[in-house]
Length: 376
Image 1 (cartoon, rainbow, N blue to C red):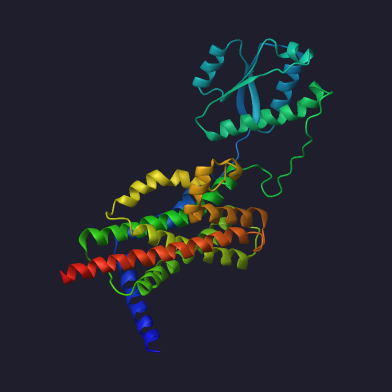
Image 2 (cartoon, rainbow, N blue to C red):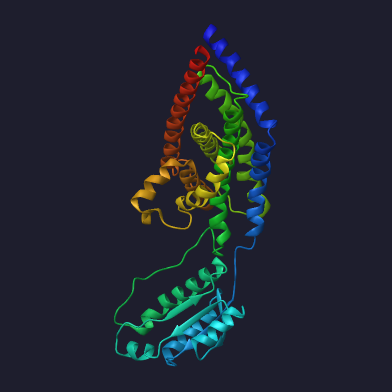
């Protein structure tokens, strides 16, 4: 009984001190609350439309054959692209793109029709203005869809694999839906890590506010502060932000809440474990510039996980955001059940246990060095 009383008293002491440290550090408050609450709004406002239609594209039709003309008509009929004109030369088309009068070029070689008539493989070229990812996405989507439709007509002998387009939860093919779901989960992990790292760096720089004692009580006491703060921020991100911007959230409340509890817990101990390596307050900002984009793409939101090189696939297991984002996308976009995301949640629980153990060991080592200095 005495042990539990001592544990509880120490837990409350650590909790109060950590809570005070968080709310008396202006930088941490900015990262936790201004960034944690503001970034989801900013991202949604920037990508609010998420859809771009009728991107102006010019054509260089050196073939001038029935096949190329039919292809051009079909491309023009798609929602993504509008044929705005024809050019005789590439120089003329490039000038229009430089003047922002078009954002893409489709070029047919002179032998396009002849090669098709002979049953040979023919090619065409597309060029895109990379000033916006939407231009590239629309032009590629339009041309690929038309190509799949045209293949049976061009070569009736060789039948391509039949396909049926079915997008049940994102019928408009909005890019914002793909990006925002990944970004929201990354905001939780990143802002927590940077705020916790700034606080840890400040403590080690001036040796003020360091809390020494039993490592388990320190980890639980500190972790409880961040868990409570980020459960509130996480509920705002998962439940309120989707309502404000009409982001699909087709799972039920309790499944989403259970997922959020597990994900936030994994992020807490991940951040605590890696914050033990931080010795200077500005270090997390450097990490922000270096890690944010790799962590975002490692979630697999824009590139299939099966296509990851082995190294990057293994590297992705370091971050809770990898599996938290995949689970959240399945919940929000496909209405997955708790059982369906269970394999991803198991990995998050394993990460929680590993990073909890690392945090215990790191704090115990820090305490040993502290008391050794006192003795000397």
